[in-house]
Length: 457
Image 1 (cartoon, rainbow, N blue to C red):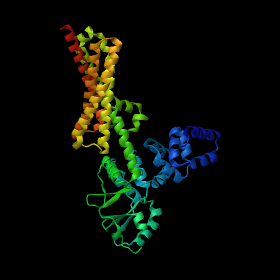
Image 2 (image 1 turned 135 degrees about the horizontal axis):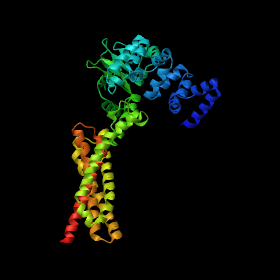
Image 3 (image 1 turned 45 degrees about the horizontal axis):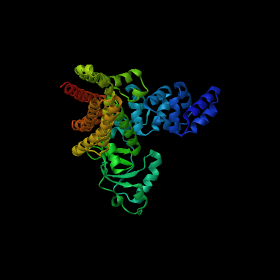
Image 4 (image 1 turned 90 degrees about the horizontal axis):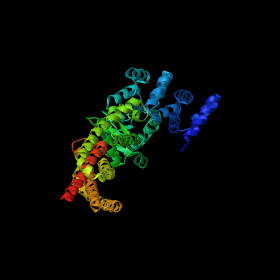
């Protein structure tokens, strides 16, 4: 792990000394992934100065690791001929992503300067939804005919691998119309007799993706089968490209980020690029974070109205007010725990709609046991603190029931949303937390009111 801060400081010193030769040697000595971390800390002018000193291969690799806004920034200020040259060295799916983040006329200028075959393949990628298999696949695939033998295939690999910059995980067997017939792993290929027909060792029962398959399905397929790559076909079973494990890593990271944002009440759909929420335009961040906060505000007004409805109870027994944060805090926390477990379980497949009843009952029992434990503890502390048996019973009983209800709500809500085909991650947002607050306050004040009535009677 490199120390980015010290490296950036050293680079700035070299820039100040105007020692171009030393700066070039230092920059080209780092891995492209490390350079991406370094470039993120540099100013725009510093980035441009450093980028111009990189070897073409290194600059092209660096672009793959940079976030979209920095890719567009650098390509927009360097010479367009050089930019086109660097783009042509990148994988097709990466190029489609980069050009997709540009204005249409600007991306067309680059496409016109790229080799015709490369350009047409990228154009096709850009027609697919960027969150589908077609949008993230690499169309450059190693294919062989069904008439080939092992020796022919090995020779094809030697010729094409370096020339076409292929991702070499599997060899795909196709007919003259590019229909996918089978797949062979490199290991199987290297350990088979050279005169053996490729059809004799290929796998015919192929796990494959369709060009329109969504990202969550793609990630699930890779997790299930643990392949390094999966072929992508169209409606007619024609091989269009492959999705590799590193593409899926990016998908999982995006999905996880979106799930975290959604669960925190941040509306990712309100912005074009999720990076804007953290590091982009401040108004985009405000736009993404405000909607759910308004809904939460309405919910909290309901909670305030509940408290106001029991105003007479507060007047008679003001001490009950000091326990309100205690009940709301623990109820919210245990509810969030249940929500997190169910949302994660639904995401990984460990929990399904068919097993909903089992998990709801299980979590309810857990909530009751934990609620009872904390209820007894709170009752004992309240009793000892205020020397008031009745108050201790009210707070303790409210705590037990509130935590049980919060657990039930937290467990049930993700299943309801899943059934409605709504992202269950929103269940852990501020709205559910507010709902738990409202119910908790109602339970607490109801018991307190009943206790006061009993005292008067």
